[in-house]
Image 1 (tube, rainbow, N blue to C red):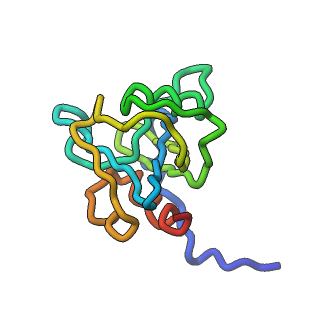
Image 2: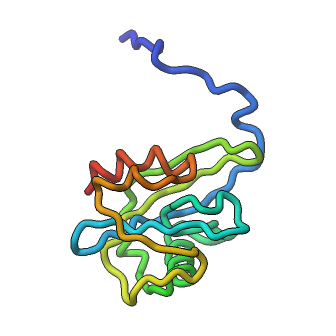
Length: 149
């Protein structure tokens, strides 16, 4: 079987330079089908951009355990690993590192999300997700999330 690879391209070598950073993110989905986005605070990298809540996976920590921990720290909510449904992942080369980010859907949690780390939260309807400026790694996740919703 012959496959046409004309639509594929090899990434320039410089795109894969830098350490691999594993982060994990969640698309919290409320009863109305809206997704929670969080705005990065002033003084942080990519300040003012909207993202899916989450964070870095610590050494010897599973992505699911890291996400449960990060959601508690960032939003003040509690959930369990068994409530997380993996739906997509992003692989993106930033100038200083390469980001690998699994995205999980989450519909069950305890508590009301509060912006403990971010400066603002927004519940966003599916049709409005693309209206929010996001980091480059998050943008390719939007069509996958929209299909999943």
